[in-house]
Length: 332
Image 1 (cartoon, rainbow, N blue to C red):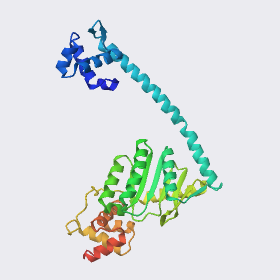
Image 2 (image 1 turned 90 degrees about the horizontal axis):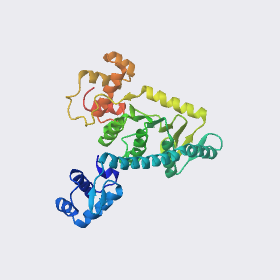
Image 3 (image 1 turned 180 degrees about the vertical axis):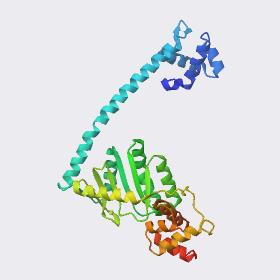
Image 4 (image 1 turned 30 degrees about the vertical axis):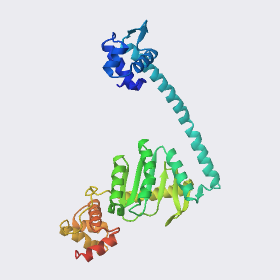
């Protein structure tokens, strides 16, 4: 342990350690050994006396047993930390009151129909930040489109990290297109490292946030998030949104095993197998995943991972684009 943790300066710690080894050392000798001005040494000795770790009687220095002297300092620090902890705990106990006030405000602004309309973009961000702060159990999210911009990722990162630190369960559904950008891949890796569950779909229904399964946020216009958002608490509407999320999560796929965060080479056919070509032909023919998986002889989950890898190789944002790109390369 560094004695600076209990309030010593570096020079005071050095002087104290030398006095423990030899209490007969004079201020002049201490100054010479430590290459300090003797006036600095005398001031530090006075401070050490005030800490209670040394005695100075008629110019003679005494050093009480360190376990007792430093132990008192540690106990004092522990008392201060405990008092601070109690203050923080008292403040935290008021969060429930704040949360209730926010919920009541939302209810009032929703005209008793359980839906709050928030139109200013800055106000939407504030409401999302409030809801994320008060979330205690879970945050469920659908993020359509992609790859997402650097600004969008930077805006979401603090909220995601805060929730992760508080061990709030987080599940995010992204579109497969996010794998086509290194910045987005790095973001996925970071979120996954914090325990965020991530799945991918080719096309997400619309943007959706659900906090503690008690309040949801959806855009007023699905294709234009800048128009504002609806904060939904109405039980019937909320139940439908939660069901939508769960159904989307069930059909979504985990990040493919082939995904390693590095761009996949697409300039040659070396990574394309005959089975890959078969998958692409069946997709182009409009076969369902179940039919294609049965024909290829793999599970549906494995097939979808293979499709995700092929889309990444083909730099395609959808299965349709993958089919077109494959045809242009003569793979079909």
